[in-house]
Length: 177
Figure 1 (cartoon, rainbow, N blue to C red):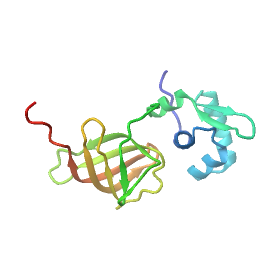
Figure 2: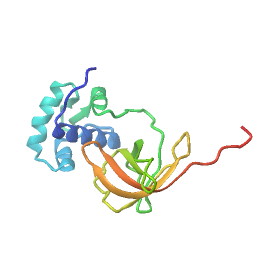
Figure 3: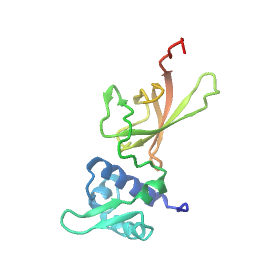
Figure 4: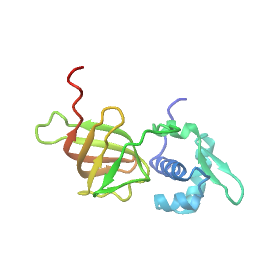
């Protein structure tokens, strides 16, 4: 599929739909999306028409109806739609976060002697996270990486937390290998 250029508003709406759908696995009402992105339900309905035309969402009629993301929606946002994603634990101010999953961890400024930042892309809402909050991510499934730090900022369009790391640890492997 060729890359579709979406507006920031379309990305926000699509991401909210994917997050809500991932939590409930049922059709999502426009009102619920509107509440999540802080917009008018009428605006959401209008945007959904263009997203349907782009084959990024499908409408589900009836009383239990609403909208569902298509496989193209995940691709358009660069979000992996895994049937059974590995769970990467996430803690926020010491409390486990159960309704969000770490999609991707990017390390930036690792060459800087005093500062290392991690960009943590989440599947799930990042609304509850604020600058200065403590977070810990991991251990990751394969390497056992555990990252701890403080939130420096967030990119709501891409669902990314920017974390100033205070520690990064990976278990030491068996030295006999």
